[in-house]
Length: 317
Image 1 (cartoon, rainbow, N blue to C red):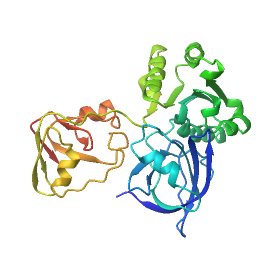
Image 2 (cartoon, rainbow, N blue to C red):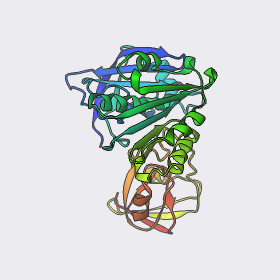
Image 3 (tube, rainbow, N blue to C red):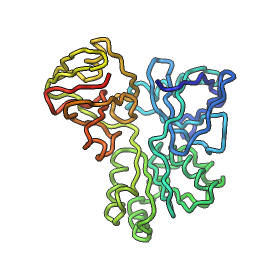
Image 4 (cartoon, rainbow, N blue to C red):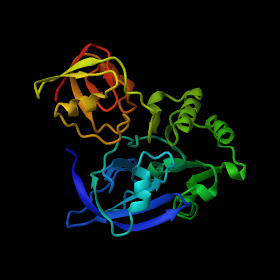
């Protein structure tokens, strides 16, 4: 089980009308752990939902967790609750930081964020700056009025490393970055976060310029996942239960129906919370958490969205 902390909202600031910047501190004597650049935490919201948000502080800042959360009109209930209900003084639970988007050692690092996807890249930029590493930060958005952290990035220690592209100001990030990538050394590492279409474009651009896959890093906020398919049987070995998963039922719901509760969070195959070991059978991987190499090994499955290609799966649960 993931370690959890009781925290209190120490500071709250609304930026760009629809982004709330929250700073948490411990609500008791248990000190919050140090963070790594690129890490996120699970936030247990007042409405019962659990959502992952990237930490966007300088990793040197200890004893706090800082988040930037966009009030998304397409929200499934998480961001709206965070924006509306997390006020200064609110107490809640969060997980220990987990890092699925860690920095690799590189001669030069290129950070490219779209909209609220800038958040994990801010912590990376601070870490690289503190370590005296070579890097650049690119912030793409619709307008400066709808962008958070602009003043911090324009006036703080990261100003000399940051370039902004705002459509409303006539900036064309596609044209500028396409030209810029032609000048980059292929030993550089590229990190991108933002809307899925934006990230796909950055990844394609890097590949077109002969960047190796191992030098291209991405983090999804959310994905559209179809968890339906053919019915199949699951044998939960440790629980000694045989469970039928119907065509319209998710694997995690079928397990819960038979009393096998698996910890979950995003329910979209993004965060890895519901990862289980596969002992027999061939999973039908629907997630974006596992790498292609990990999926090919067929020894793990994210039960929130994935299914089975074989008629039977044996899981170590």
